[in-house]
Length: 403
Image 1 (cartoon, helix red, strand yellow):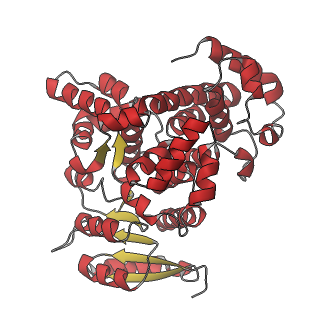
Image 2: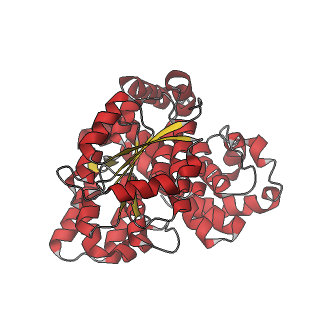
């Protein structure tokens, strides 16, 4: 096994399924060191002896089912990316799997799809997570949310007045719940023909019963306290995120004239700082000091993170969205929104919109926007059409600013 080979573990109580996976994935032997276990307990023993990058587990297994197994993996090996691959599931089991599972795939699974999902997960590990902050990853499936939004949702559900429209409106005000709902609707369980990046569409497709189940799932969310909301300035952070999402969508729509790209831009803009929420809930004393320093001294947080932690909140957020199966355009925009010139994609894209929107959300005039130090001028200069088309777009947004 060469240095670049990755460890992938498959778990299923049916020997013929494991044999089938061996045959289907034979072409990956040069790249993956594949291991196979007939039970969750056997798999956990294997995992004590070596580090696995990805684990793919069946759902229904005797003694220890796939959910219980992945809960144990999440706790003991938080850096491992966790997939469910199952042909037997109902919505109740799907909701139980929300906490410990990154992605849900259905049997029979197209071999090329399975390979691509695992490859992408391994690429994300390689790009963002090599030897970086393994303890932070324990917080990833416990999505941080605002207490007032969670309370409003539960009150609305219990009142009997909930409908797709008012539920979607409340969800869209919280970064964490929005991301979790979109993770769920894009899972293979629902078999949608295209990815969904819009919260209202996701709520309509999932239905109130499923949405209620997600919201009331205790293990899915980790609510901030009222004290944390005040001390961390979360109202300001969430307002910035929502405004960035709105600006991103508008800019992308005007520049690219692509509805799907505009939806992706809104989601990427709204979730571009989700990594900050994960750091906040990770209990990292060092990160808390860096966050306070950046706020009090008006310094770039991501540069402090890069120096002291070797990973930025943008990279952590991109990793989260990526392992949840979000579109590449979204994870790319979140990962590189500070410095798009570092991205291999240098053309007009969702990333362009999110980069511009993040800066614009901090400006109150076109002149302030043009002079803002956060603009990656090297990157923007490579997109010549912006010189003519961007100023009127910025002017329109500033004149109709949503606060």
